[in-house]
Image (cartoon, rainbow, N blue to C red; front, side, top):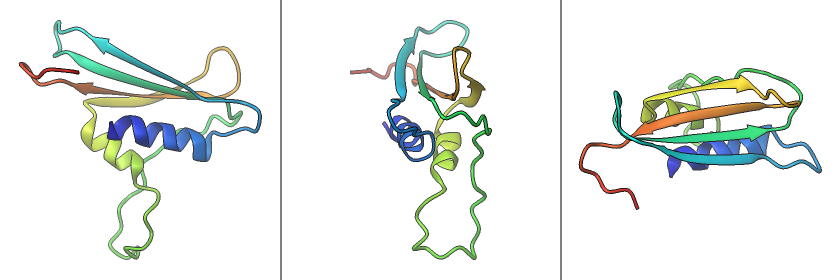
Length: 107
């Protein structure tokens, strides 16, 4: 849930273009060579194709600065994450994959 929340919040805050929406796609990839995986894809329509990057946590940043760390959380929780330009128009898709532990029930 945290990965979905962070990626969608980033699309709303940084990828928002008035009059255009973002798209969320969730998929459950069955176990195979890798464990069962939940894949999250969030596509925005902002024209700039700037690669998303996690901010470096710095101890000198005051604790009241509560923004800019979402991709650090995604990187820490996800087995894999990356981005690619949107093939059918302006924007980009940021995706992350979360592997489900064997025997864990997904509901």
